[in-house]
Length: 237
Image (cartoon, rainbow, N blue to C red; front, top):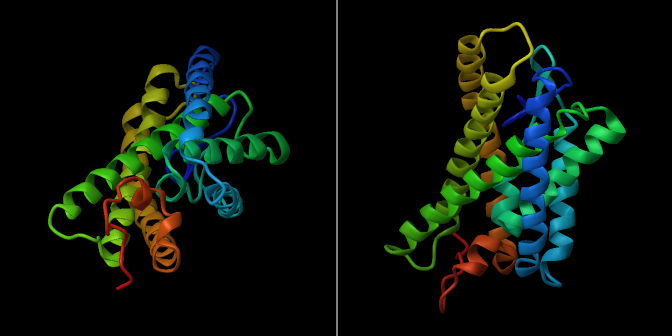
């Protein structure tokens, strides 16, 4: 959610110009890597799904609620995108949504686009997918194929942890170059507590969506496709 549902839709002026420039450069470099690596994740089946994921995230992120001055909250979608279409493609989906929102709908400042992309498209996606992939690997050691309810549980935890970590990304950026008047301690405690609650809501939505896709088309779930051995797709349950 933004300072967002998981990290934030920061407005211009929340952090100073040098900090915005540094994280803008970081976001551009990371997204360039994602463009290169996404070729290994996309095929004729997953390209349409990636479009649907981006459209879904765009729609739900347009529903905002205030958290701090200049910072709003909403669904992030990073873990959901990564589990369904892969971490690199997922990061690109979220980044595209953020760019469109900033340029066409003034949702998040243009100068803060680098920090927003870093938090939501990079940290949220990377942590969410990392948690899901690690959990999936552990469960497969005991149960193959992985039951759909277990996959939903993984998606819930991944979304929750990804949301909180993305929010903490904002805290780091604020510590480096915060330009607002709120103290770092106040921002950190409020962000953590708020995003734990936000993460629970994101986790529920992510789990329900992933389970629905896994039950009907497990071959479209990136997490299952890339870790599949003979008979390791999730089974409807």
